[in-house]
Length: 203
Image (cartoon, rainbow, N blue to C red; front, top):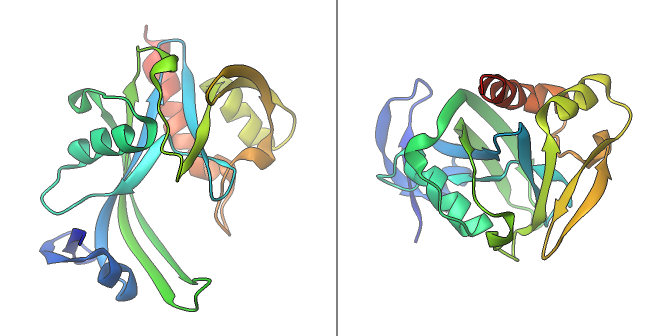
């Protein structure tokens, strides 16, 4: 059974609980949003199997006793199949996230998360990616500056690469990006894109 550390709304640790009860009872917990980028200023978006949309390179809950950076490395390994040095991951920001919905089976799902957003440079071979077929269709590699402009303007296309079992060119548009109700793709992704632009412009 999977246990998560739980917190009050101010971020003070108060104990642990099962993942099921965390979401049933709207308990605050921590998640990590993992982003990989390369030295040329490209960012890797995961293509989520359930939505067929572009989202974080990898993401998930912190398990009991796990640090954010340890969770970063674990989620990347589980979903993308590569090992990264989590000590090199850099913080973008921590966001308080609230969401409530009714699942398809009729049960209530309450999310109260401190979402830790981190980026890490990847210098390895893209052919080493091994995707979790239950969650991931592949990755999209696009230029961070081009992506930021696309999301800001909400129109046009950008060129990138689709990485699945092969690597092939592909164009992407605003509708390819996963967003939740009441938010825009620019709002959702601008901070991480600006962070990567800042990091890669220095080199």
